Structures are given as structure tokens and as C-alpha cells.
Amino acid sequence: MKQGVFWMIPKDKGDFELIHRFDDTRGHSEIWEEVVAEYPALRKYDYEHFPRGRVWIKDGKATIFLDEKINTRNILEKIARIFCLNEDYEIQTV
Image (cartoon, rainbow, N blue to C red; front, side, top):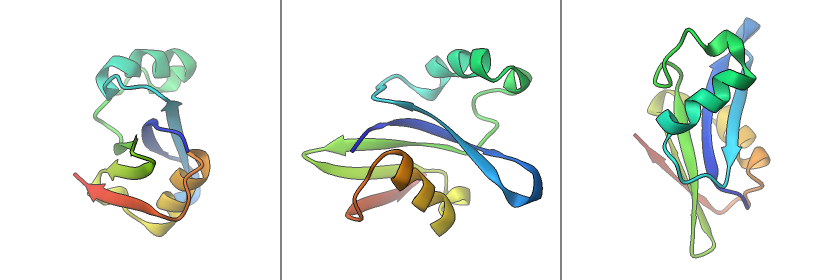
């Protein structure tokens, strides 16, 4: 299991990309400059523009904190796969 932050970036035809950073306890605003350095097309957006969230591991249990708009099975499955979560995770919408 891994923890970190993520953003859900919409793509064409309903697809999306999950941009993420593992094992980072910094906030989204602090990490955004690193993200736009890697993805220059995102430079025109503020870190709050795209739905985002965080995976937090405490006492061996994962909690996914995410924007209510992206609390869908498809997105949760991708988050779980990328962050190597087992099926026993909690979801907290914000």
C-alpha cells in the first residue's frame, strides 16, 4: 500500500488520467509546481481546478479522501490499483 496525493485530469471521450505523487505529506498546493513542470499543459490551471484527493495509510488501513464529484467505481478502482490498495479501504468525500 502506498499513500500520497492525486488529481483526476479529464481527457477526451470521457477518459481521465490520474496524476499522483506517492508518500508525500505535503499539500496539493505545495506539489502543484512539480506537477506542472512535468505536465506543462496544466500550467494555466490552479491546483484546485481539477478534482483531487489523497490516500492516507494509518495503522495499516487505507483511507481515500476525495472530491465527491469523483467518487465513482471506475475512479476508485484506478486509485486502488495505482496506490496498491487491498479491497479493505475506507472512503471519505470532501
